Image (cartoon, rainbow, N blue to C red; front, side):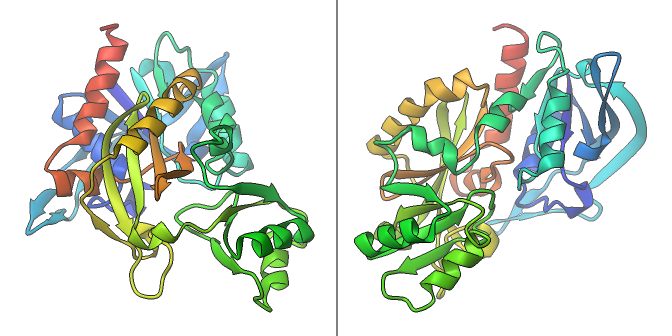
Amino acid sequence: MKFAFIIDPIQRLDPGHDTSVALMEAAQALGHDVWITQAQQLGVANGKAFALLERVEFTPVQLSEGLWVAVNPWFTLGDRTLLPLEAMDAVFMRTDPPVTVPYLYATYILDYINPARALVVNAPAGIRAANEKMYALQFSDAIPETIVSQDKQVIRAFVERKGLAVLKPLGGKAGEGILILEAGDRNINSLIEISTHQGIVPVMVQTYLPEAKDGDKRIILLNGEPIGAVNRIPTGNEFRGNMAVGGRVAQTTITDREQQICRQLAPTLQRDGLIFVGIDIIGGYLTEVNVTSPTGIREIDRLDNIRLGQQVIEWVVRTRQGK
């Protein structure tokens, strides 16, 4: 089969960390052809989505003393070819957020792939529908107490009532811009003004979960089913557990409460064509639903001695073959 991956420039990817590389290596290991492109290399002609694609081959990373190690160079590229994306069996949209206007335009282009010819992971309409902060709000009994507002008085009242709260930009990634707001902090007005762009842009504010110090669990779901998890634990004076800001990772299991949350999400994710998803859970509460380029596979594979990428690719193959 042929797999296309829409990614950020491959030279900027970390082969020992990036889930996109893990998925592409898995496709290659299972005997499939792997092609790459970027969002700005997509277009539509004669009613079909096209892309400037390059064949790519990998020298897979190897586990050495508990770390993924890559050779240099770890990939080689073939010539660029303009092809209809329907010539692929599956297309993975793996461009990193934020979901900007060009990002949205790329999803509109992907709408012009005939779903009978190629499976798009994740569905472009699903990506548009699933802001990674807002999407969780529909599961009200699974999330901590939450408001979304750009109004300083509303946000202040929430913080004063809770004592401690977490503010999140709606379009952020990797923990960027997340703040702890504390009642009585003399900087609170300025923090809210900066985060809301002077009351223009709404933000999410959630009650602070003290369990955050013990970790922010990333669970990977494949077509609604949890297939692996990793705990991301803050280090030093940092309150965020995101790997991008230095959080350490630890082996973990999926609790009964977390399994229940996954079952609650599954029908909605399946309805929206959100096949490969990473959810974040703190203290038994759902905090985010990541659908653009969820990560964590490399860390789970390393800690649990499994190969989640192969599970994903095998699921895609079975689905395309109608089995």
